[in-house]
Amino acid sequence: MRNVFKYSIMTLAGAAILGIANPAPSYAQEKITITSWGGAYSESQRKAYYEPFAKEFGITVLEDEWDGSMSKVRAMVDTGNYVTHLIDAETSDVTEGCDEGTIEEIDYDRIGGRDKFIPGAAHDCGVGTITWSTIYAFDGDVFPEGGARPTTMADLFDVEKFPGARALYRNPDPNLEFALMADGVPMDQIFNLLATEEGIDRAFAKLDQIKPHVKVWWTAGAQPPQLLADKEVVFATAWNGRIFNAVKNEGKNFVIVWDGQILDMDYWIIPKGHPDLDMAYKFLEYASRPEVMGNQSKYISYGPTVTAAVPFIDPAILKDLPTAPANTKNYLNANFQFWADRGEELQERFEAWLLE
Image (cartoon, rainbow, N blue to C red; front, side, top):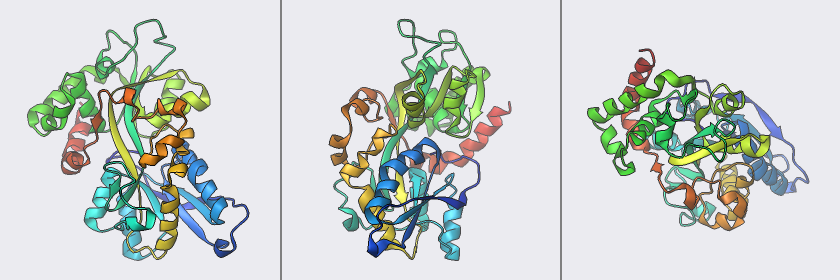
């Protein structure tokens, strides 16, 4: 996952092939290619979806990675050279592709209907697959239990009370939102204020306070947990699943601060005009089954988008999901429309600000 303005190159070649067991005769030679974000997230999809799907239907699953460059999706549609069936995309990508007509409108009758999804997950052009959030985490060795510990977004900006190097995402989103939260702006006023020059100036002024303490402006999701693990930084903004993976699977003493989290979703999308829609829908129907979707949280702490999946999630894991009641006392929903409208100009200002 990434936000709207991450810079790198989409790779849709050399896909990894998942082995299959006991291939079903009717699908023995069939294949599906699925593109996602790599790392711990793709690994969770492999275990929860790809391997069980391959085993049940005898369909070979090919994996690939991308960075959200919708120009590559347009190229597939324009040339008719479809190198992937499905792509895991962020809300901004779904909105952009739907408006342009470069991704398919979803026939929800083929996957069990819209009603089984949580609000916002059944997009006209994308099927919600996870809820996730951008948070910040800190090194629990530096701020151990029993002592003063960060608990609010304001604490990320309080370098006197909580000293140490920071790592922030090299993007105006979510930094502008986080800055206004830390400056005391209520959640329901964040985007109204950012829609004004006064609000933008206020956010950058708050960022000025923390800028000298930002050691790394990261650009890839794997960086924050690695920077924390290497003790290069004490705090890092991150995608919650990356930190969860480092804690659960690598034994790292990192602590997520849920206050101020920005909640978002990812969706499955299909390039417009794909000649093998039946295969894409076969996977979508399977991946939207409650008992299947509930499995992903075993491997990464992203929440389901199908309401009935919750009973299939281990209660011990539920507490680590972005949508757990204890984690949603003070959060902000991502506003993809705002960033679609204002993102380019704010990105330019943000890059100029970094050079000041």
